[in-house]
Amino acid sequence: ESSGKSGSFFFFSNDRQFLLKTMTQEEKNFLVDKILPPYHNYLIENQDTYLAKIFGVFKVNQRYNSSPVYLMLAENIHKISKRMLASIYDLKGSTYDRSVEKKMGARNVKKSTVLKDLDFKTRHGYLCMAPRDRNVVMETLSKDVDFLQRHGIIDYSVSVQILRFPTGISTKVKHRLSRQLNHAFISQGSCLRIIHSTETLETYYSFGVIDYLETFNSRKQLEKHAKQIRRLNRGLDTSVQNPDVYAQRFMTFMSERIKDRALSRVSETDENDSGPVSTQNVNNGLRMSNPTFIFKNSQTISTDDSTPSLSRAQTNFFSDGCADAN
Image (cartoon, rainbow, N blue to C red; front, side, top):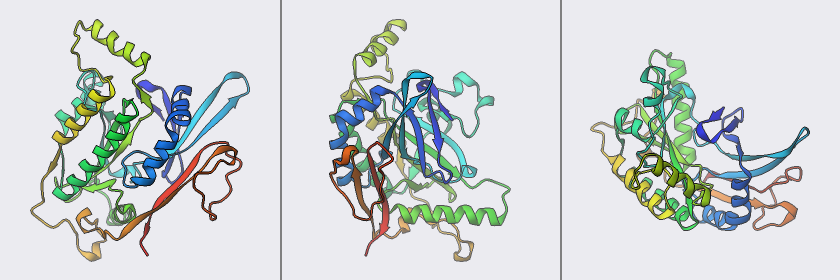
């Protein structure tokens, strides 16, 4: 699959738990040479982060092309079956040139079409969730954005999937999707990636922060000024801004668009229906296992004797997950 203006290509694992994404040499250099140690430390200390975790970087040499291809192995933040996908948004908090529907036309927009900020405002408006869930989301996002801001990172976004049970499906299929949701709720522990919406009993949100390897460099500054000159507007709210302005705008947008609204009814279904549970009812006695980083050339920060050999991968790896507390 290809991704918009960036021209990146995605390759998903069969179980959709992981993805391979092409990346530029500039992104690779920034990750490996500039922020890897603080990034590693941040993930260790903030295991409930919304940052889509990066597991490795690969360099692939091409036989008939002198330019190598760089691939990033990362967590796929959207693991629920595509059958439940109602819509998907890429949200940055910007208003300039942030409508896909306007360009494509409403008739051409599919459920899998990645929409943007202005589309979200007109089509959906808000993410509605329980007050406790909203507090967790905003606190976690605030920590993530603070980390990105301190390291001069911009252009990141929240990828949000709106999930609903499709109409006209058999009871067997609905039970299977319900079990998948239940598993996602329980296994995430403190990693609140799947959230029960308070819009309806059968609406859910899946989201995380993606595309966080871009800095406010000279190329990005030139891009910003070029757009302002083209539109003859120095105050144009382009996506590209300095890290401080970008972070403030991003958090303001998310704060305005995430609402704490409680359902008037309990969100659980009958026990025999194997229906989805609410995040309010998930056992909090869960923790994440400790991430492990294995560096190229056997330079190790943290190791685990049980970690299998990855000698064939000339790259940087870590593993993480949610596990039951002892």
